[in-house]
Structures are given as structure tokens and as C-alpha cells.
Image (cartoon, rainbow, N blue to C red; front, side, top):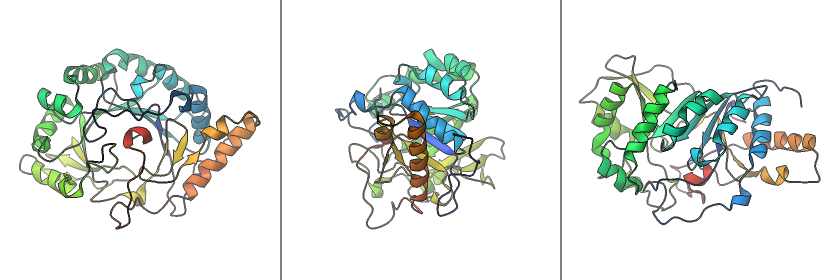
Length: 338
């Protein structure tokens, strides 16, 4: 298949798609209470997960359509045994994308330098509190020190920028917004607060108790001067200069202030389903194509190409969270990929 033009994946609302989120596994080493219950056991069967060769086929076709950013997600992507090889193989593609990863950080201390050597450009680390007891209560694992060690290893390995993703929950850690930002500024990390979304496996999300972007901004304002960054582009976070800059803080208001109009992302689940939106209830099955023994590799790639385009063309104007008829997706975030 020849190289396609860079603006190939355009939907009916004239949004060009350049960002592919690839989930490598639905497994995770933490049990964050806004994501999955402590006793969660509804894992995808191992034989349904895409092999590394299958992943590479899909990513390779996607880059020929103009995808120039790939983020590896999970679950926890660093649990994938061949994660370093996956990074290296993606960076060896003829149309190699910028490559980042979203992780809980527990295995970064061991893997950060290997990942950088393989070609990883950036890392996002989930961290919702700086209090060890709260961390243990929120994640059901006493692994706070491992996250900090992972962040230090990522910095020592030269990953830049290092982004911190924080979800605030009412009555649990919503008092920590100023503390988290002060720490991030001191450490040279880029902090992004993310509204809790209705994608948890436990079904505990409640609009009335969700910590909104407005309340996060209100809690930060007495402590910091915040001025909007003029140009947002397709980034999910609304950014603010802190105390005149150049440091910034981001707030991702997926629920209260949707940014669907500039979305440039599509998603591949670890079991090979293509999704146009986190909240989509429709999926395009790529695994079935990849494992069709009656097709040649050229035919497989051609069919994946067609399904990529069909998925993008079928993308809705918005996720519809605020519509009266909104229904939460059956898959939780851990099975979709963030």
C-alpha cells in the first residue's frame, strides 16, 4: 500500500484525525476507585488480545493514513511483557509517529531508560494525591514510593515533558489541587486535572458529586495567577499560564465543557476494536480481519484501511454526555484505553 496523503482521515464535521490511542492491555496493577472496584475480575481473555504483530499491522496502516501521534495506554501498558519491543517497532515504521505512553508509573523506574532508547518521546503519569495514606486508600495498593521513583527515572532518562494526570474526587482528594500544582511546578512536571468521567467499572460516577473544571479553577485561583493560553488547538486540556508563565496547568473538562469540536483522536482497544470516541457504543472489529486466514496480508491491510476510514466517517459531532438520553458505554475506561 502506498503512502496516503496526510489529511486522509477526515470526518463529516471536517475534523482531521492524527492521533491514535492504542490500548495494550486491560489489566492494571492498581485499583483506583474511580476506575475499577477492588474485586474487579472481568478481564478480557488473553487469546482475544491483539498480538504484537497484529498491533503493528494496524498502527502501520494508520500511519499511512496520516496518523502522526500514537499514545500507548491500558489498563497499565507497562504490564505488557514486550513493551520495549513494541515501542522500538513503532519507531521503526516508515512513517514513524511521535510516541507517548500513559502509565501509573509503577514500572517506570525499571523501564524508563529502555523505553527512551527504544524511541519513546513523552510520558503521562497518573497521580491523584501526594499523601501516601490517601494514595493507598484510593488505589488499594501501597505503591506511592514506586510512582515517585518512576517519575524520577523518567526525568533522568530524558523524557520531556513529563505530564501528571490527576482526578479529584469530592471528599477524598479535592482539597489537594493547590498542593499538587505547587509540587508539579517545583519538580518541573506539567500537571493536568481531569474531570471524573462516567467510564468506571464500578458505576460510582455521579454528576452531582463530580469535581468540575470550574471548581478546580476556583480552588487554584487564591494561590496562583492563572491566565488562559490563547491557542488550544486539538488538545483536550484548556491550559493556563501560572503566575505569568512559562509554566502552565491544564484542566480537561470532558463532562462540563466538552471539546468534541476539535477532537482528532481515534482509539484501538487491546482486543482489536476501533472506536471513534471514548463514549461510543459502536466499535469496528479489526481483530476479525487480522485473523481471517482466507485473506492475504495485502487484503488484510486494505480492509483495515477501509474500516479506519469508515469509523472516522461515522464519528458523531459529540460524545453526548450531557444529553438526556446518554447511556454509559458498557466497557469501562480500563478496557477502552485512555
